[in-house]
Image 1 (cartoon, helix red, strand yellow):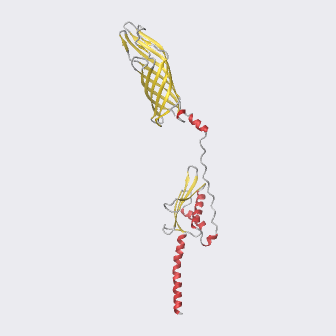
Image 2: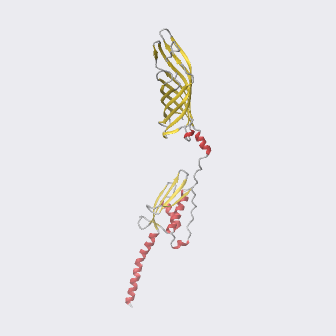
Image 3: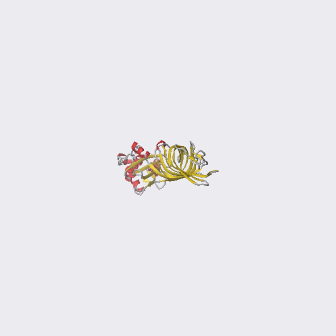
Length: 334
């Protein structure tokens, strides 16, 4: 009988010694290690933990990550749509388990606290208590509607003014190529598809041919003209900043033939009208500065002869087709 009592006492002592271990094991399942990142307008870490405990029942905030459920919570404000966005992970390296959005940070925090409480599960007396409901998360707003057709038309009609200058050579007014200078203004479309970016240029030009000599004397030719050039399309060239444009042009002005002979000086003005085509290359160095190049072929509608004393012996006669090339640049007005 005494032996049996001793055995019973040993069993009871062993059970009493194992109770704290069982309690600690159950406690580990109800303790969490919380990594918490939130903006200044949101609840702090302890306040968020109280939200979790009010929904999950007895739960402890662990001082170390070992032997505890690991949750990572981040709360931040989206400046784009003025909503608060919360994200929950169940540990480092895990995918985002839940994302909520709301009008206030408190609202989003309550929703994430409820999610953690559901993950922990009820224990003891708390199993019969329903969790405190959180405010329903606010749905993500729909994306903005596509750009309407009137907006696209307005973009196509965006215009910019360009001031420009160029130098080059022309073959039309002398026996040799004559240097020429041009300055003007251009109105150009700067938005929309390439086939809807026309331009219109108005410029003044001056050219002076080298001296033309024969045994009777010397003759100089000068051309003062105004040019109108239209480019209906702009074909993409070497990149986003470079384009190639086919253009049509009309030029009107006055051509002056100034001659000197041993006997007298001559000054014979003539009208100048020409029409032709141009290939224009435009490149933008910056948004406001550009460089360009022109190659033009034109036909004078009224040809003239440069002579000193004998019309039947001209020093130079306007060719049927003339050529001009130039290099220049300019700036864009805002």
